[in-house]
Length: 64
Image 1 (cartoon, one colour):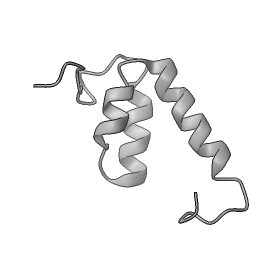
Image 2 (cartoon, rainbow, N blue to C red):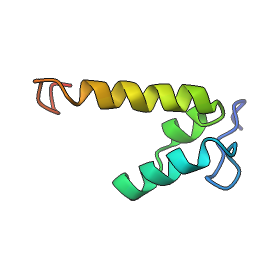
Image 3 (cartoon, rainbow, N blue to C red):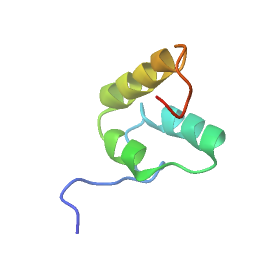
Image 4 (cartoon, one colour):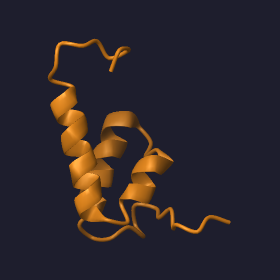
């Protein structure tokens, strides 16, 4: 039993739901890491923004 809730898309805070839907559309599933982070919509948005910023660099996906 985990101490931190791992919500489904429907159980996540309202502000996190569209972000999780976008992840599901991109990946086909929502990894548990994103579901746990979705407990804080600001943290989830920050994580996605960081991922987006790093993907614009010159390093290959394998190196990132």
